Amino acid sequence: MLTDLLAALVRLDSTNPSLVPGGAGEARIAHFLVDWLTAQGIAAELDEAAPGRLSVIATVKGTGGGRSLMLNAHLDTVGTEGMVAPFEPVVRDGRLFGRGAYDMKGGLAACLLALLEAKQARLRGDVILTAVADEEHASLGMQSVLKRVTADAAIVTEPTELCVSTAHKGFTWHEITTHGRAAHGSRPDLGIDAIAHMGRVLGRLETLERTLSTREAHPLLGHASLHASLISGGQELSSYPHRCTLLVERRTLPGETPQQVTREIEVCLSDLATDSDFRAEHRLTLARDPFGIEQDAPIVQTLRQAAAQVLGQAPAVIGQSFWMDSALLAAAGIPTVVFGPCGGGAHATEEWVDLASVDQCRQTLTATLHAFCA
Image 1 (cartoon, rainbow, N blue to C red):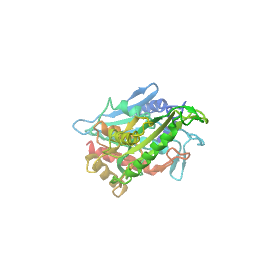
Image 2: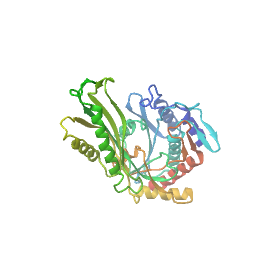
Image 3: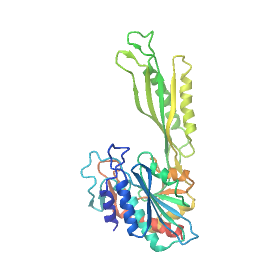
Image 4: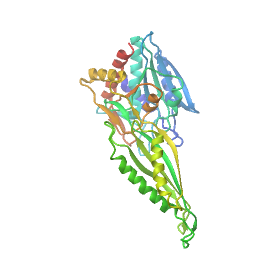
């Protein structure tokens, strides 16, 4: 049943249209889930965060008096450029290949089957599935769903290689613009070079990046980082450029705030402003919080014990560098941990998930539900 269900999910193109213009989006797979859940006798409904951007909320009601637990996965995938038959799943050597198999329809399949087992178990606490849209871009689905549901704890089933993830980095995006004065290239007495001024900004940011690497490292995530991502400026070869724009990404650690990061960049710019010709603007364009939960939190301990029963040994506790919807769940006051299957090729041209690990993920989720929601 697991392989057939996962193959059916992979066949459904759910490319995020915010990443790939004309992408199929989540509507088709969301309707598939509602139909599948309804056929299993599980109440399910759609949540529309934006036109055509559908998430699914499904609930197995408890008999009363138990803790509630949310299982979470995202429906959307990245694009398929360079892939051959991305939506035709192939099973080979215990692996299922196809776009989204690893990131993260394997985790979604494990959630669905665990939800089905929860229905048969008649637990005291509610078990809630949130299968959300748009995680790969702006997390519209998770933000919308959290306006409607909550839980005593949550498990996000992003791939973790069957390790227990208790932390991940956040990020902030920044736009810095330096202003010059346009003039003919033969008139240095009239022109001010905005691109050259941005070079001075880049030097300060490089120093800031080195400073970040000398600070105390997070035990699971290492150091924060900063890099220049995109730069543009100038109008033609024979003119002094009047403007230059730089886009910067800063990866953040638990405990760091967007306000703190913004102040650090502002200090870099203010140090340069002693030059009367230097003029720059800076704005924060997006912030996504880092995530962290203590290892002695009840949901972490319960999940680790359940995984040890299934795997025959205690799973490693890890941190992950990339951002996930777990940060939004934690910000909503829901203690959250990340646990998912093994595989490879996320966002790559060959993507696969290990089928045995998906089943071990399902077993672990089921054992956690029995312990946490009993």
